[in-house]
Amino acid sequence: MSAPSPLDTKTPRRAPDPGALVDARIQRRLSWLPWAPRFLRQRNLQLWVGLAILGVIVVLAAAAPWLTPYSPESQSIVDKLQGPSAAHWLGTDHLGRDELTRFLYGARTDLVVTLVAVLIPFTAGNIIGALCGYFGGWFDMTIMRIADVVTAFPFLVLVIALVFALGQGVTSIFIAISIVSWVAYARIVRGETLVLRQREFVDACVTAGFKAPRIIGRHILPNVISQSVVFAMTDIILNINVIITLSWLGMGIVPPTVDWGVMLSDSEQFMLIGPYHLILVPAVGTVVFSFALSLIGDGLAVKLRAKR
Image (cartoon, rainbow, N blue to C red; front, side, top):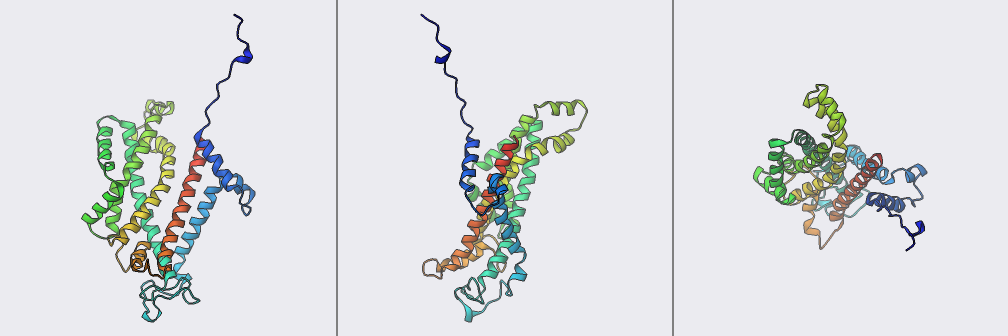
């Protein structure tokens, strides 16, 4: 038998990177936008679009006292259930309150509450995860078993149960979300720390006599926190929907403080008969805010993958 020709041998093909395919698909989907400058179409457009949308929402919420002459609590029965007009751009509700004013002040409430509700578990989860990954042993095993118990329950059900037990109010929301949300951050950082713990630069730090707090704070956390930042964008979306749901159920923000969940709860009776702008205004705001954070999360993930 003759020896096989070199031309007959087939070179094995490398499987395409799924992450690269997703990035290329996103870029193709967004690169057609004619209004986008060239540097944006070539450089992570979804991140910039998300930041632009979020920036507009933040500016509108911060400038609420200067953008509307009304108070979110002021009522005018003679002006109730009006449609959009020159005096009330988004109409009024069943108590004659200006919808635009309530929307802007509600955005301020939801943004602040959501930000604080994410910062607490973000900080605690990163620290706990880094300690578990670095030290391991009984400490890691104990914390991970506690995390397993927390994740055994659905997120929304557990938060509602905790808020019901703690009572209505912003403080109860912070405590309930923090008790549940730290687990995801801890697991992300723990996994990354377990990998970094085997790297040579960590061994060099130990050999040089650096203490564990310095190694974790200056050499491990800065290298693993980026994954938590990407996840935080998704967590903010989840948290704002939880906060709005709690307010809609009457367990969240306490009136007369206004947020988008309170607006949805007040307009629930008009869902079938109208006027429909009472439902659409807070609902569209929630969708746009979530969409912006989704774009930012995708953009950060692409940027992180490119650096790696």
